[in-house]
Length: 362
Image (cartoon, rainbow, N blue to C red; front, side):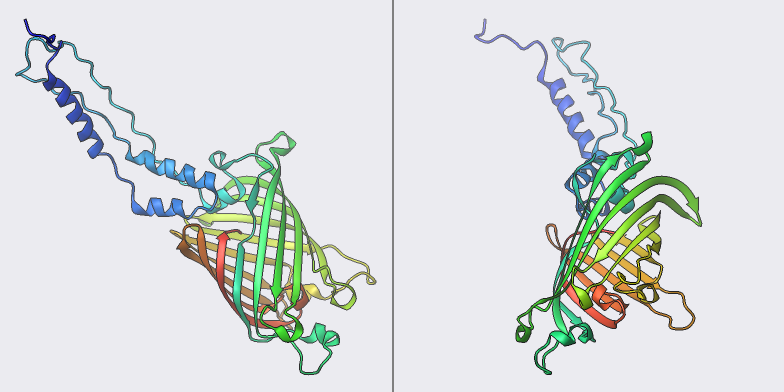
């Protein structure tokens, strides 16, 4: 008798079982590179991890084959070896669209209330050049005729929103959001006038978002946003600019293209309190925004117009964000027209900026 007991079954069937498992794994469906790139471009951690999980689901094997019977197995092999059952193939996951992630329109996108999320783009442009700096509002503040604004400055925008209530009126399709955006224009390189912040715009707003689902001209209508918006620059007397608006924003999408149409109505003010009674002649009564995603690149176009045959005025803004390192993105911005800031609402200029972005927005 030997010192060790003989094993209850031969090692050959076990080896075959392991080989079958490895073979099944090797033939798993491999996700496309484009799927991984789309996930890496998602700014929110939870959304990005969910996307990775969905794409990784494609790599699961359709089935694991049972070990093949071995004609040469010894009599000690177990006659009824367990068979590994085939695993069900998961449905092809649908990645969340830009609008769905931004407004949490799908159930898989919902993150609950009271969390900070990006609203409009968050960026810093250390280099921004203007073709026509607007000196006119500041003429009374310059102590010397040779002083004025530089063409080169910097721009910073910070914007966030919070879902204050999820499922209003007892209906899951209505969410209440509040948002805040601050945009500053800094004459950082103009040391002759002590490098001041020439303009800062403050923009709080409240938004009731109604989730919709309908088709029109090949586009899917995803939401209607009923909002109230206040915008001001916090300046006294002759430099003060402000207005209040209510608006309805309609969101559509098709593939990687999102379309936002936003008509607004300016709430009237008394003549004594109105700092800029003609602002609608320059800023118009609404805007149109197009956003297109191509992998980790995002392109957007913003258009405004007063739709007047005579004295037609408007604005065009182009943005492009692209990957640099990790979550840091490059950001390029071009503007042409009226109203780049509130102090410039009646001033036309072209500007070009280059900088960085941490989060995208709408």
